[in-house]
Image (spheres, rainbow, N blue to C red):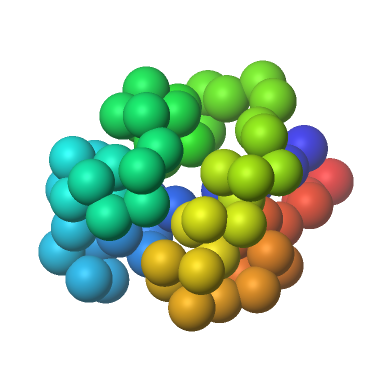
Length: 66
């Protein structure tokens, strides 16, 4: 299973979904699905934009857990 740490990262910076959407140019629905960990697939461009926005690496955003 893949765990997404977007909600934690947003919480640490007190960001709302709309804040991240506005700054990254991603659709609110994409961010909401990642935030709630209900996304079944993620576009590489979305991952890249989120990593750039949060100044992090992919492994900081996603984690594989058994």
